[in-house]
Length: 393
Image 1 (cartoon, rainbow, N blue to C red):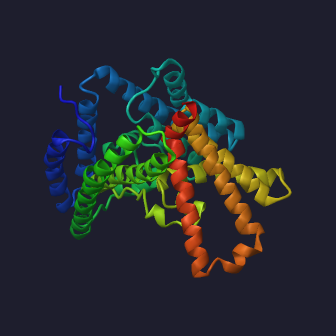
Image 2 (cartoon, rainbow, N blue to C red):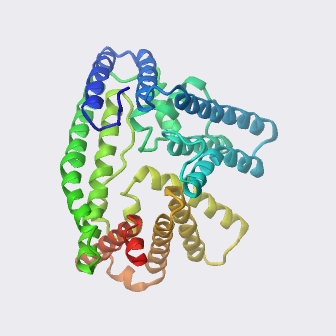
């Protein structure tokens, strides 16, 4: 059985060309309904190859997807019958994330995760988003075929970007679809993103990785500092390259998957960085954890000072993000580190007149960029586990 890895190797790109030709024909022929079925067909085919033909692995994915859709449908009926009851929402969310939690904990403590399969993290994000937006009265219908394709859309299944269901359905289920001119423009942009992603991942990231690997063997301060910057750039070009290819392939199939990176290393403060880095993930946490915590805190009058409220929210939000990456100390520290940075940034910008006085001045913006850049790079050093390993030596 072919060992297929998404966006890597001759086999994948050969299959992509073969699958892309019918998608291109359906796009220029303006056949949105046929494109929907073709997306479903290619999704099954790619998942089959990624799972190496294992019917057990494919069955786990199918069972999880169907169970999440059933949960969403049941929750919708509960909301229709009993209204917006907070503890009903909590039960639904806990049931939705339970498989992912079991997988993360068993993988960390036992070395082999139960209930794990490809795409479980990103599918869980999508499921929770649907449940919360049903509760918010933003989603009024859950169609099995459409939601299955949303969960399993193969270009973004493993590492995102994380789309939102209502945005995805506009492309996937829209009756009018794209005109020939719109599709050709999207197709051309998709090809450019695939080429750019290949250059990022296979040329720049692969080259930088050599420095990351060799410098990682040295315990000196100088080597650690060089390693820190190399790893930060490697992580960006590798992940941004993957994201660009995923978005580009989505475009070929007529789905305008949202951007995931927007020049993060030009950020002038840590909040701007998270508006530019892994955008779909950070905005998911912002919308469904931080914002909901803030609304609950304001309604409940938990704090007399909103800056204190926000600071605690940043730490909670990023702490959860760190745990989502994994239960190792490096990931947890990484999340808490960025939560504290966001909290300090918020306090500084809102409480200190020095920032308000100089924030538009050129020298201040350059200094802010320099500090932010180095704080971000140090965060990547924490994330890489290299720092923890050095501390243990």
